[in-house]
Length: 98
Image (tube, rainbow, N blue to C red; front, side, top):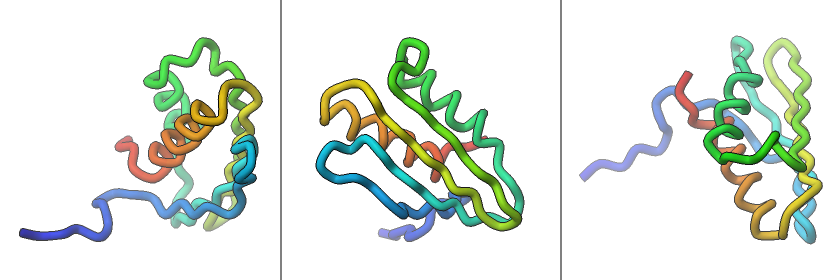
């Protein structure tokens, strides 16, 4: 039996801020050597979630030399739905294969 601590090809995305009471605002920090195509990563993830026109999901990212700050704001849906969308997008940012 073997346990893998790091997924091969994964990106280092850290949670910087999350508003716990309503799960509406999230800020993540992606540390990288080369920039990643975040528009493709998130578009594919939102398409697989089958959200009509990405209703209530606002994503913005600001790239720098060795990091990217990703801001997510969820304006619609129940608390549970916002939790699921945020965790799915965070998982896509970390593990989605390009």
